[in-house]
Image (tube, rainbow, N blue to C red; front, side, top):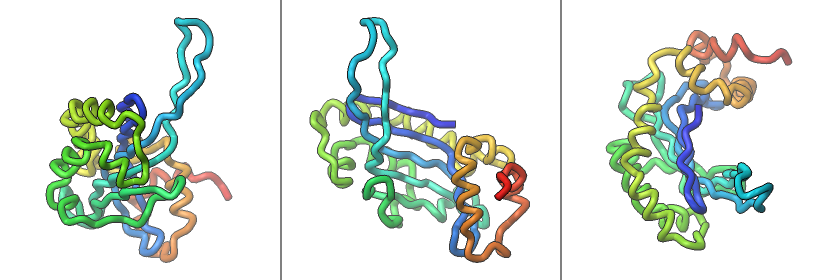
Length: 198
């Protein structure tokens, strides 16, 4: 399930995410937000035709995650990626405020999206327009993000239901574990049950 707030040049994508550490098989889940750029599209059809909307290039990502072996709502794995190199995020940034006050921090980021984009290496052509619109929607965006936080996901089945469209990525993570013996197989059972045969 993916929520999208789409603006003139940018979009904010929000979803629940489930992560398996390749290094030690620990599990994380929570809300993932991405700032992406809209790609200009040529007009098609008549004046009433549905137009293509393309939102692809990632600029910034916030992963407000809990560890499943930790305290729910402690945001032990909360971090963000201030920039991307193509499709790949930079290393995790573990800023203290992201873990200590994640919703306030997020609201602050959304209040100056042009600065967030600039830090990610992108200059918007009309930064005031998207900045003002996203700032006006910031409380609503944070509310949607909170609805997909780790504390709102109480079971493996619910986690799977909210991330079912991303099952191929979870399968990819499960196939690359360095210590598969440490995996909580009960918690990942919904994905294991649907994992395609090799």
